[in-house]
Length: 241
Picture 1: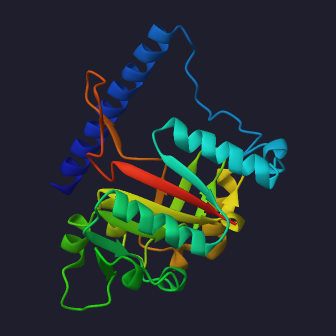
Picture 2: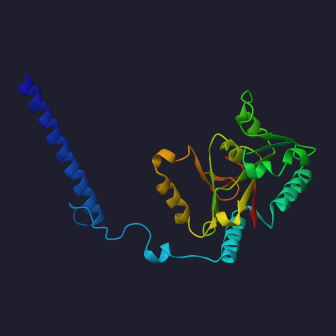
Picture 3: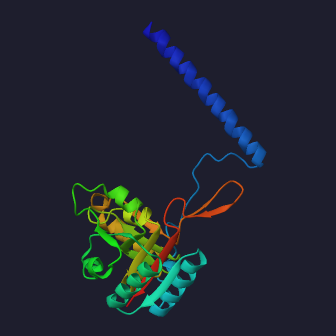
């Protein structure tokens, strides 16, 4: 019985391989290309040398990031100090009548003292109250305020990492997102950011790595563009330094 069962399995495998061969032969015939039985050689891996050494000056990075971020519907402001950032946020909150604001629990944001400066807004600091349902708090917020961990000029992208103090909902759920980008964190190439994750190792990677390139943009099958469906509809990038 065992031999019969074994023979039956071998027959099934042979039939499967025959069908597989026929399938691949049919594809090759339609492509008018001979079957390939060995994997192609890849003498080059990763980015070419010239790209690994490509570097913009600081002003070129600022110009490139600004143009790319504006091109997808974002807003960019160039500010000199964190005091200027504070004034900018306060003015925007008053201009847009922001009632609820949620921010990351970061030292740089705590130093702004938004809680004392936004008299007309309720400011919540992420994950500081164990009884608070923070996802709902972020969803009802008019403003979400975060610090950028990295930014990339060539693609106009900002990287925001998640942690217990930096919940991903702060950048994903509010109506308006304000991202503060210190100039020393603005790089030329995406590879300069990605390599830091490789160097950290798998065990030290955060739960979430988010690349933000302007406001949420979604299109249906007929290419009707809608802003703000899967994230903030208005995004401000504040370049500081």
